[in-house]
Length: 227
Image 1 (cartoon, rainbow, N blue to C red):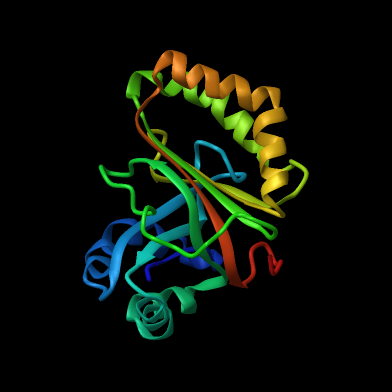
Image 2 (cartoon, rainbow, N blue to C red):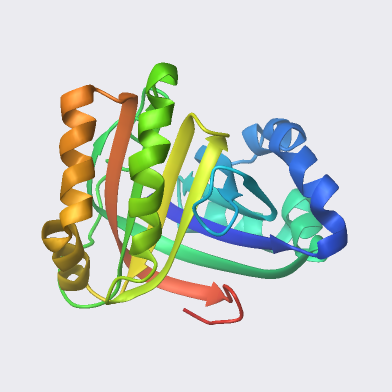
Protein backbone atom coordinates (compact mmCIF):
# COMPACT_ATOMS: atom_id res chain seq x y z
CA UNK A 1 0.00 0.00 0.00
CA UNK A 2 1.38 3.48 -0.84
CA UNK A 3 2.49 5.85 1.91
CA UNK A 4 2.57 9.67 1.98
CA UNK A 5 5.12 11.58 4.05
CA UNK A 6 5.80 15.24 4.71
CA UNK A 7 9.08 16.35 6.24
CA UNK A 8 9.76 19.86 7.56
CA UNK A 9 13.49 20.56 7.55
CA UNK A 10 15.16 23.41 9.43
CA UNK A 11 18.69 24.05 8.24
CA UNK A 12 21.58 25.12 10.42
CA UNK A 13 22.24 28.87 10.04
CA UNK A 14 25.38 28.39 7.93
CA UNK A 15 23.66 25.98 5.48
CA UNK A 16 21.27 28.41 3.81
CA UNK A 17 23.16 28.59 0.51
CA UNK A 18 23.38 24.80 0.32
CA UNK A 19 19.68 24.40 1.10
CA UNK A 20 18.60 26.90 -1.53
CA UNK A 21 20.76 25.16 -4.15
CA UNK A 22 19.03 21.85 -3.41
CA UNK A 23 15.79 23.20 -4.87
CA UNK A 24 17.47 22.63 -8.23
CA UNK A 25 20.23 20.09 -7.70
CA UNK A 26 18.21 17.61 -5.61
CA UNK A 27 15.69 16.99 -8.38
CA UNK A 28 17.80 14.48 -10.29
CA UNK A 29 18.67 12.23 -7.32
CA UNK A 30 15.07 12.37 -6.11
CA UNK A 31 13.78 11.22 -9.50
CA UNK A 32 16.05 8.19 -9.19
CA UNK A 33 14.91 7.07 -5.72
CA UNK A 34 13.47 3.56 -5.86
CA UNK A 35 9.79 3.44 -4.94
CA UNK A 36 9.29 7.22 -4.91
CA UNK A 37 6.15 7.81 -6.99
CA UNK A 38 5.69 11.56 -6.47
CA UNK A 39 7.77 14.22 -4.76
CA UNK A 40 7.93 17.95 -4.26
CA UNK A 41 10.81 19.75 -2.58
CA UNK A 42 9.24 22.95 -1.28
CA UNK A 43 10.46 26.25 0.07
CA UNK A 44 8.69 28.11 2.87
CA UNK A 45 7.60 31.67 3.53
CA UNK A 46 9.24 34.11 5.91
CA UNK A 47 7.24 34.32 9.10
CA UNK A 48 5.47 31.12 8.08
CA UNK A 49 3.31 32.54 5.29
CA UNK A 50 5.13 35.51 3.75
CA UNK A 51 5.90 36.06 0.06
CA UNK A 52 9.61 36.34 0.84
CA UNK A 53 11.40 33.01 1.42
CA UNK A 54 12.63 31.52 4.66
CA UNK A 55 16.02 30.19 3.55
CA UNK A 56 16.37 27.93 6.59
CA UNK A 57 13.13 25.96 6.26
CA UNK A 58 12.03 23.53 3.56
CA UNK A 59 9.48 20.78 3.07
CA UNK A 60 9.64 17.43 1.27
CA UNK A 61 6.26 16.00 0.24
CA UNK A 62 6.50 12.42 -1.01
CA UNK A 63 4.28 9.52 -2.03
CA UNK A 64 5.95 6.10 -1.82
CA UNK A 65 4.91 2.81 -3.36
CA UNK A 66 5.29 1.17 0.06
CA UNK A 67 6.29 1.78 3.66
CA UNK A 68 9.44 -0.20 2.96
CA UNK A 69 10.49 2.18 0.18
CA UNK A 70 9.97 5.16 2.47
CA UNK A 71 11.90 3.53 5.32
CA UNK A 72 14.83 2.71 3.03
CA UNK A 73 15.11 6.33 1.85
CA UNK A 74 14.99 7.82 5.34
CA UNK A 75 17.43 5.25 6.70
CA UNK A 76 20.16 5.27 4.09
CA UNK A 77 19.77 7.52 1.05
CA UNK A 78 22.81 9.83 0.60
CA UNK A 79 20.68 12.92 -0.07
CA UNK A 80 18.68 12.43 3.11
CA UNK A 81 21.88 11.83 5.07
CA UNK A 82 23.14 15.19 3.77
CA UNK A 83 19.99 16.86 5.07
CA UNK A 84 20.38 15.17 8.44
CA UNK A 85 23.93 16.49 8.74
CA UNK A 86 22.98 20.04 7.75
CA UNK A 87 19.75 20.55 9.71
CA UNK A 88 19.14 21.58 13.28
CA UNK A 89 15.85 19.65 13.35
CA UNK A 90 13.60 17.52 11.13
CA UNK A 91 9.93 16.70 11.63
CA UNK A 92 8.34 13.95 9.53
CA UNK A 93 4.70 12.84 9.40
CA UNK A 94 3.33 9.68 7.84
CA UNK A 95 -0.05 10.53 6.33
CA UNK A 96 -2.96 8.45 5.03
CA UNK A 97 -5.30 10.27 2.60
CA UNK A 98 -8.92 10.68 3.66
CA UNK A 99 -10.09 12.96 0.86
CA UNK A 100 -8.36 14.55 -2.12
CA UNK A 101 -9.55 16.44 -5.17
CA UNK A 102 -7.86 18.54 -7.81
CA UNK A 103 -4.50 18.24 -9.54
CA UNK A 104 -0.84 18.86 -8.84
CA UNK A 105 1.17 19.11 -12.07
CA UNK A 106 -1.63 17.31 -13.87
CA UNK A 107 -2.03 14.41 -11.42
CA UNK A 108 -3.62 13.73 -8.06
CA UNK A 109 -1.00 11.72 -6.15
CA UNK A 110 -3.22 11.08 -3.11
CA UNK A 111 -6.07 9.06 -4.64
CA UNK A 112 -4.62 5.62 -3.93
CA UNK A 113 -6.64 3.05 -1.91
CA UNK A 114 -6.16 3.32 1.83
CA UNK A 115 -7.53 1.83 5.02
CA UNK A 116 -7.69 5.24 6.64
CA UNK A 117 -11.07 6.16 8.11
CA UNK A 118 -12.34 9.48 9.41
CA UNK A 119 -12.69 9.56 13.17
CA UNK A 120 -10.88 10.69 16.29
CA UNK A 121 -7.27 11.80 16.25
CA UNK A 122 -5.19 14.43 14.50
CA UNK A 123 -5.68 15.33 10.84
CA UNK A 124 -3.59 17.29 8.34
CA UNK A 125 -4.72 19.50 5.47
CA UNK A 126 -2.81 20.41 2.33
CA UNK A 127 -4.00 23.06 -0.11
CA UNK A 128 -1.92 24.07 -3.11
CA UNK A 129 -2.44 26.14 -6.23
CA UNK A 130 -0.80 27.47 -9.35
CA UNK A 131 -1.81 31.13 -9.32
CA UNK A 132 -2.55 32.92 -12.58
CA UNK A 133 0.17 35.54 -12.95
CA UNK A 134 -2.19 38.47 -13.36
CA UNK A 135 -4.10 37.34 -10.25
CA UNK A 136 -1.09 37.28 -7.92
CA UNK A 137 -1.68 40.77 -6.44
CA UNK A 138 -5.22 39.77 -5.41
CA UNK A 139 -4.01 36.44 -4.06
CA UNK A 140 -1.35 37.96 -1.84
CA UNK A 141 -3.68 40.73 -0.71
CA UNK A 142 -6.34 38.33 0.55
CA UNK A 143 -4.96 34.81 0.89
CA UNK A 144 -1.66 35.43 2.69
CA UNK A 145 -3.21 37.31 5.66
CA UNK A 146 -6.00 34.73 5.89
CA UNK A 147 -3.60 31.80 5.75
CA UNK A 148 -1.58 33.31 8.57
CA UNK A 149 -4.66 33.18 10.82
CA UNK A 150 -4.65 29.39 10.55
CA UNK A 151 -1.62 29.20 12.84
CA UNK A 152 -3.63 30.86 15.65
CA UNK A 153 -6.87 28.93 15.11
CA UNK A 154 -8.14 26.79 18.01
CA UNK A 155 -7.00 23.21 17.62
CA UNK A 156 -4.01 23.88 15.32
CA UNK A 157 -0.78 22.19 16.28
CA UNK A 158 1.28 23.76 13.46
CA UNK A 159 0.84 25.45 10.09
CA UNK A 160 3.16 26.64 7.34
CA UNK A 161 3.12 28.17 3.89
CA UNK A 162 5.10 26.14 1.36
CA UNK A 163 5.81 26.63 -2.33
CA UNK A 164 7.51 25.25 -5.43
CA UNK A 165 8.11 28.69 -6.94
CA UNK A 166 7.97 32.09 -5.24
CA UNK A 167 4.71 34.00 -5.53
CA UNK A 168 2.94 31.82 -8.15
CA UNK A 169 3.03 28.17 -6.94
CA UNK A 170 1.94 28.06 -3.34
CA UNK A 171 0.70 25.57 -0.74
CA UNK A 172 -0.45 25.58 2.88
CA UNK A 173 0.00 22.66 5.26
CA UNK A 174 -1.75 22.59 8.63
CA UNK A 175 -1.87 20.02 11.42
CA UNK A 176 -5.02 19.87 13.56
CA UNK A 177 -5.93 18.23 16.85
CA UNK A 178 -9.07 16.81 15.27
CA UNK A 179 -11.25 16.91 12.21
CA UNK A 180 -13.85 18.88 14.18
CA UNK A 181 -11.34 21.64 14.94
CA UNK A 182 -10.43 21.87 11.27
CA UNK A 183 -14.06 22.02 10.18
CA UNK A 184 -14.88 24.67 12.80
CA UNK A 185 -12.24 26.93 11.30
CA UNK A 186 -13.12 26.19 7.67
CA UNK A 187 -16.85 26.79 8.06
CA UNK A 188 -16.97 29.46 10.77
CA UNK A 189 -14.09 31.77 9.82
CA UNK A 190 -15.60 34.66 7.88
CA UNK A 191 -12.22 35.60 6.36
CA UNK A 192 -11.69 32.05 5.16
CA UNK A 193 -15.15 31.86 3.61
CA UNK A 194 -14.62 35.23 1.88
CA UNK A 195 -11.36 34.08 0.29
CA UNK A 196 -12.90 30.83 -0.95
CA UNK A 197 -15.70 32.84 -2.55
CA UNK A 198 -13.25 35.22 -4.22
CA UNK A 199 -11.10 32.44 -5.65
CA UNK A 200 -14.15 30.99 -7.38
CA UNK A 201 -15.61 34.27 -8.57
CA UNK A 202 -12.33 35.65 -9.93
CA UNK A 203 -10.78 32.38 -11.17
CA UNK A 204 -7.44 32.93 -9.47
CA UNK A 205 -5.96 29.47 -10.03
CA UNK A 206 -4.82 27.64 -13.14
CA UNK A 207 -4.61 24.43 -11.10
CA UNK A 208 -5.43 23.57 -7.50
CA UNK A 209 -5.58 20.63 -5.10
CA UNK A 210 -7.08 20.02 -1.66
CA UNK A 211 -6.20 16.97 0.44
CA UNK A 212 -7.07 15.89 3.97
CA UNK A 213 -5.09 13.17 5.75
CA UNK A 214 -5.19 11.07 8.87
CA UNK A 215 -1.91 11.46 10.74
CA UNK A 216 -0.58 7.93 11.20
CA UNK A 217 2.52 8.90 13.16
CA UNK A 218 5.13 11.63 13.49
CA UNK A 219 8.75 11.79 14.55
CA UNK A 220 11.25 14.53 15.23
CA UNK A 221 10.56 18.15 16.18
CA UNK A 222 9.18 21.30 14.58
CA UNK A 223 10.21 24.52 16.34
CA UNK A 224 11.44 22.41 19.20
CA UNK A 225 8.14 20.59 19.67
CA UNK A 226 7.30 16.92 19.12
CA UNK A 227 3.91 17.38 17.48
